[in-house]
Length: 125
Image (cartoon, rainbow, N blue to C red; front, side, top):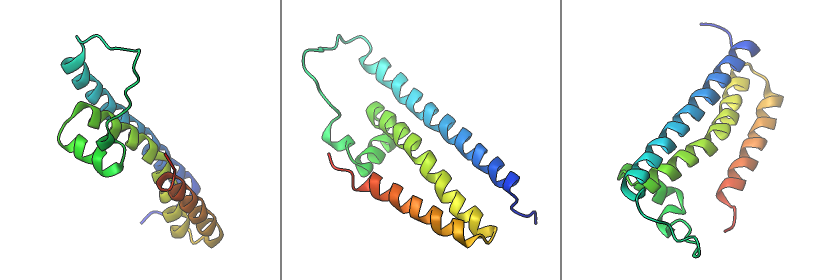
């Protein structure tokens, strides 16, 4: 088994970031294409602002919308994936530092991860 050197960790993190962003972009693109096929010919009324429907404002609603292949749900899910990529990067760093037996960085990275997760889940409207 290969050791978890800094170069190997950087390679894995680079691949995680690259493929995460590509996956998020593909999901948003698919949702956008589905949206344009369905609503592309309608003329939008820009005098009235209509935000996202209430069912697409929380994670469970977004996942449900994406699973049911609703275009707006897919777009929101892709954006959620894009937000999750840096969080996954920090989570992987915790694992990598643990494999390298670097307790100081494990603790520091866990604090960063906790702050990130708290900020993402406790953000007000």
